[in-house]
Image (cartoon, rainbow, N blue to C red):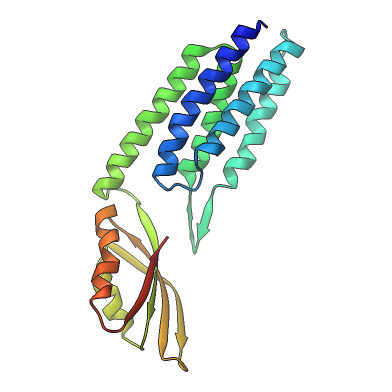
Length: 208
């Protein structure tokens, strides 16, 4: 394979993965730009290598890429209580491996199509998240400086869905440590700490 062709494939993969990765990092997703670049460029490099080693039958090495990335994607899944999160992140990691692979073998149209579809899905997901449609969820950790009714805290949080997943009572210090799983719009969830701050029993809160 000519050097100019190799450079073109690497640069195309790197630049497009960088743009997407920066957006994911700005959105505070579990995986940032580095992960998407490494996965894409690595897959592209292996695809080019597979063609150079055996242009007539590169499939064994290429299929190994897809299988291997599946384990990396599984690592992006997060289990909280009885729910599992991170499927979008895991699937985009796998998809960017495919993107790097098809660009590496010279299928530019297929690669750009995969990249474009990924952006369309992410933009739609961002719109639904902003509108509170679907499962935009966060974990909120609340600490109090005295024992209060859990129901009072739950009503004050006021999210569309609020589920208590952990409770710690410190009788000696007269404090509560509560962890909630809440669902709602980004704006509603971000307002919760301000509402809690108005209460004299409130000590601290953390949104994860």
